[in-house]
Image 1 (tube, each protein chain N blue to C red):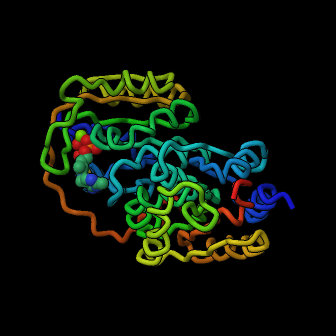
Image 2: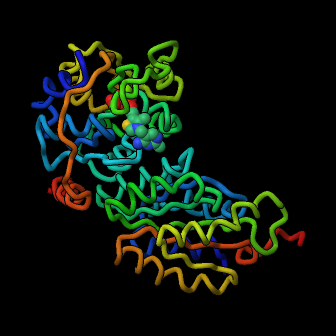
Length: 168
Length: 184
Ligand SMILES: Cc1ncc(C[n+]2csc(CCOP(=O)(O)OP(=O)(O)O)c2C)c(N)n1
Ligand SMILES: [Mg+2]
């Protein structure tokens, strides 16, 4: 299975046509896939809270948005999540690389990993953790759930899900 | 002129357009001067008005006017390259550059010293950047609408705020009526 294509297909099948991204090594493949597709508009943002602003506007303009980012970005988006996405009750699927989890080679990444689920829980943001490649089968349901309830929803995807780095 | 005087003067132009308005007193002033379902008031999230407006302009064809502030642009400077490389012709970013954080008591921003927002917008790749003095805002905004080109309009004005009530409308109501106006 090409996991990057599978994710982009699920996004497109759920009507997601506006995607903003800030890169992570683990997300390189899915970002490239989204960039190439005609059925999804890709707009890179410079910071993830900026990206959430873009998504909020796109949704009010009638498009279904999504953001693709690293879990470290939870640290820069709490205000945007609480006072924009949640306060105005907007849907936002967040495909998040869960750095600092099992098979992580870079120690510093663990420092935000240990806060990631706690911060999401504190914000009452539904969070799903993809650890095995087959977990992607849940993505379609998660996207439907997100646009049903108009909430931000986190999909945490760890290094094991992406197949590790080949060196661990 | 201060921000509220400019808003009063351009209210007839704004009335028929989709407007995304900056946090704090700018939204309170616009709301008090001429509340419209086509106005999206930001009640929080300093810095994201220009990004929300850009997402909106990319998602649908109607013109979008963002009323932003110098302080908010400075806090989300990454917005300028994103605008410079992606903004469609229906996007107008009007920065009320009063050289201060107006809502929080007129503390000076760096645009009151050496920083030039129009120059920064140009350097970020924005093609149509216009700087005007407060009294010339109306004609410059009309021109931007008529140009059909993405425009960054920097409006230089005095620091100061009108005393207006806080917006008590529920955010979901603001958002819902705005979305109906966008779709209508
Ligand atoms: C993250 C964050 N920091 C600080 C504030 C407080 N704050 C609200 S409005 C504002 C000033 C905005 O200034 P500007 O965008 O220039 O608008 P003006 O009121 O001057 O028109 C500040 C600092 C905030 N709401 N959020
Ligand atoms: Mg200001």
